[in-house]
Image (cartoon, rainbow, N blue to C red; front, side):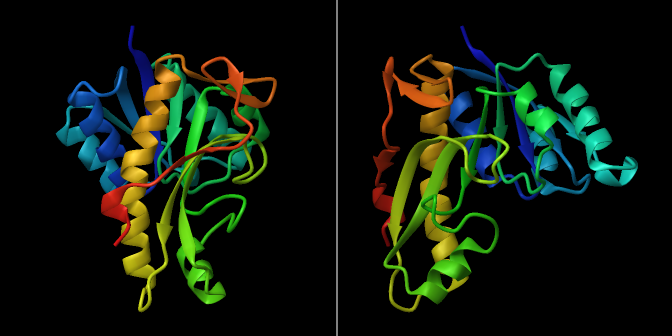
Length: 218
């Protein structure tokens, strides 16, 4: 039985594309039902249309406040009766109402090794700090910004001469492998959030699963 999945995005949708590729190759037991964005011009929506996946914009400019917008977002998502909601570069902070509505069935990927560098500009901050390593983290979404229970992490080195762009490209390569793997674990029933604690194969996950991908190391 495949999981019904809705993806939320704000930009180019590169993680969405990686997930769609894995799903179409039969590597993920999911049905991608729709891509939903807060930005009508997001290129990720065009990617969805090209793949024959529903593409929906729910712009905050059309609503008087954040609560009203998020209720409209819930309505747009729920028409697909999703088993899992995936945040793939969605750049708005959710209301508590939306987070609670999808508790335990909403994943996000963040471009840092959480809890380091929550929020924006993670690559620049890692470079400014002289961090020897960087990476990405998949976590369940809670009310705390980038603070939900951690699922998996992929580490990449920070190399001499790195710029924000070169480091971001390395992290993206790791994201495009880590996220589909963690999504697959959730969709297959291996991964669950129980009373705020991540469980993998029925046992509490005391720290995130670590991954290292060869093509993201240089």
